[in-house]
Length: 181
Image (cartoon, rainbow, N blue to C red; front, side, top):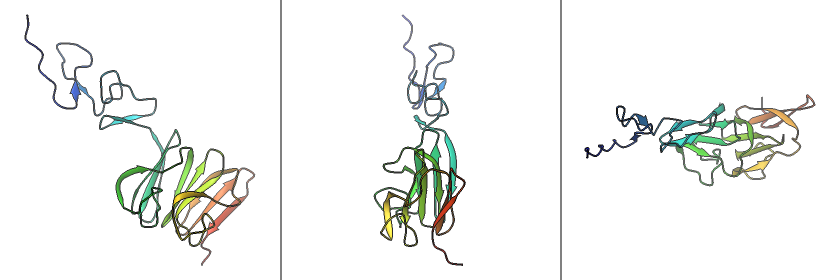
């Protein structure tokens, strides 16, 4: 009998079974073998650190935080979080992206100075973070998403320093937040 094959280094495997190649598959990056042989990622996804990640379709940078959203509607934010602008139930800064809690149907995300708003597939808008100047919540700081009053059937979303605006399907625009010159 022949000698037993040598073990592959961590993160690599022999996924094609060819003796000549051995250990040719990078399980941390290969979208056909992400984390394990024959574990493919879906269309538009990438393999990062052995886990499939959906493809990012948009990104928005605010005053001290950034958010991105994927084709399947998931939103991820990172950066400062003192006002709850990352959409997670704590106020700790996050160096790596964290998924926004409770919402998985984003078509756009807009970031302001200390707030974030999301346009959902349904056409309504949810916002979180500092809202002292807004109508999104009744509180000055809110880490959970709340519906923006009187905004429905929106098709586009934008945010400035302390305000946001939504373009409606009818062509009208609704804005909320600070109105100082």
